[in-house]
Length: 315
Length: 262
Image 1 (cartoon, rainbow over the protein chains, first blue to last red):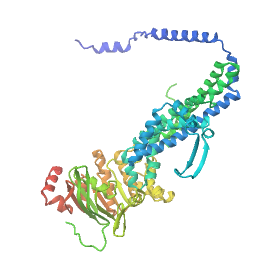
Image 2 (image 1 turned 90 degrees about the vertical axis):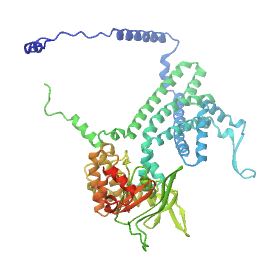
Image 3 (image 1 turned 180 degrees about the horizontal axis):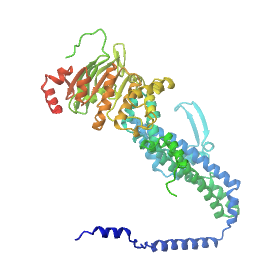
Image 4 (image 1 turned 120 degrees about the vertical axis):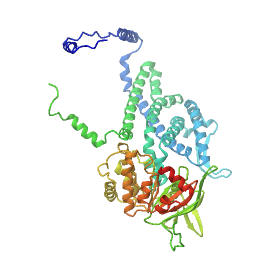
């Protein structure tokens, strides 16, 4: 093989480059076209349906649907917040040194995670069938502090709340336990070495670090909880679906009212998703923990970015 | 050997026949050690000798199976009442621990707190001191370990040597009676060992009472008032640097020194 001479190199560096023909990706065009055709066909088909689209906005803002929306949110928030608190307690029992507490927590999780939520709601709602009265007193004596009719206590809200909350608390216990276990043992020892009490160690050192692991699945669970409230409609709690059905039961616009409910589900789920990513960011100091810029440095960086450079490098 | 006399008052740290076992493995066999205020004691020995376990028994991160650890006249983990030692609750034990400081092999800095936050955590949360005063002190301590310009950084942004110096500052900020060092340079890159040892030598020069488990023979030779050689869960011999490192009497010590100094 002969090495090219210096002259050949010079010629190569001055000659014009050959034109290049880019690959056309015909496959992508075909697939895109097929998708658009199918969507068009579906839209046309939907427009031929026996549905009065014009009525849907009216249902979206109707007082009955809005009341259902409020009830859905109240039930979901109440059940989720209580489940988080109960879940933390169960998780702490699970990781404690007390064998009875450990065993109880494991059994609790096994039971309330194992049963379908709908079944749990139905069991609570029908509690009066086996316990007509709820009494708080001292057994084997006549001392009774509280005596209530079960049906008066077990409203549709309470039954749905208990079913959803107890099931979710079992899941939360597992999430919290995973979060607590994710914190390095050395962190607890360091906190011990500076004299922190068990409560301080948990609150100041372990929980803030465990939050990074706990928040994302908790957010997912809350979104599931928002949709899970639909099961409360079965026992007559007037959440979104029951509200939609209530309207449809006298004007038969079943689909119109359900689509209005669907609209609100999408809205609250989207809001919850945004809230989740905001929470994640505020608790996730891992950008800094991974060596990213501090808040002060980021602010400086942002300021530098908006300051126009003195000399532009390109005309 | 040390002059163990029937002193009218106990030394600052007095460990009496401390034993610890994991399963059938006896890690510590009735280890006794006294450290006087202002003394720097280095514990050396092969891995598995029980050095770290002994250190952790002193501030009760590890609960000894038997034996007593007296710190400044108080039995760690106990309350002396009617001639008996009554075990303390975890809360009260925590209060006792605040008078001791510890530096770990793997630093164990709090990753969610800044350097300043790490150093202020103990004085503010445990000792409940005014954060204004604590901050001034913390800045001074960090300045002393050479990290005055890193107070707003997070631990992950620091090198291993810098992290360990923060950990030392965190322990010092508590104004402890003594400091326990558990192989403080073993997890460091070789070129970062020096900066940590320099800070430790500075503390020793200031009169800080220190009990140091280390593999750094150079440091022991330069700084230690007393060297303790441990092997197989017991103290084999102890004495001045000359007595233990230069002219060891026990064959076990000689063998160890030949291997590490070779």
